[in-house]
Length: 260
Image 1 (cartoon, rainbow, N blue to C red):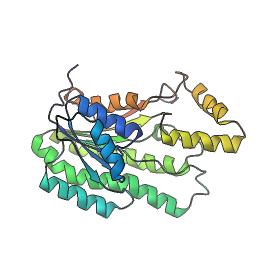
Image 2 (image 1 turned 90 degrees about the vertical axis):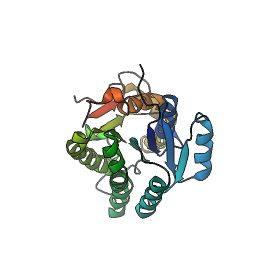
Image 3 (image 1 turned 45 degrees about the horizontal axis):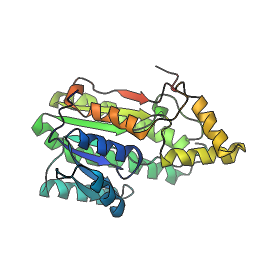
């Protein structure tokens, strides 16, 4: 299938590892011109070197814990270079733990890194999307927006806020040829999952292998997702082929989520 992404400009956040990196590679393979965003410049350079070299891919160094800096850098980049047809909002999740014992600062930090930074990027990118009558905003969230996950209290809370923000945006921006969708990863083979498994191991007294197996057994597919499997879903939603898909939450979780 031709996804018609040739010469589309894409901004991919959290793109030095895991789902973000896999998405940047997948979009580039489909012909998109990708700008990476993350806080570690050396890692950004390493990923940039993996992208097809016959296109002018680029990167922006920015830390999502500093929304003012992020806004300034992205707005300057757009003025000096180009706008973007595709935005992939993706950043690392909050630390685990019960919601009752979470500190206020944990909610504030997660709200900043997820919702506030997402909103800053949307406001910076949408004017160009409107001019082009083409925009794809894909937010990488979590299956917890459909079914809260035990031990991820802050994450469950903030992810739900992002999902509702996204649905509201979809209703407002659809008339301009812009779609807004959420991809909800289940257990995916990333550094984040490794941390969750180690925490479960420490709390339950199981070995790391036993904790991982227990998580796999909760998935009908009996395995964890590969980052590339999430990237494929994101890339499709970024394409012309997905022009009438708008305002959805798409679980990519091997069937783990029990709700429809």
